[in-house]
Image (cartoon, rainbow, N blue to C red):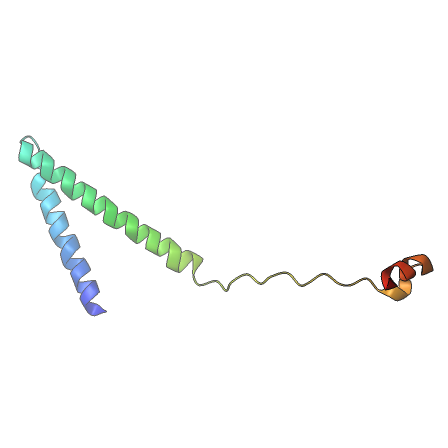
Length: 89
């Protein structure tokens, strides 16, 4: 588990270094390309982190919804006599 955390810190460090090294070189073609790639990858990673935060922290683990209880049967004693006879058939 700690390997993922360390890898994440190393990734963000290298990504920010690449982004800030590309900013002064943005007037060249390779600088523009590097900036676009770095900004794109960083944006995708941040979107994934935001999705993970919303999914696991805000929503959390909710129990599954229970199905509604079955409908009650009509109480035959309170029905009129004609209705009781039709139910018995």
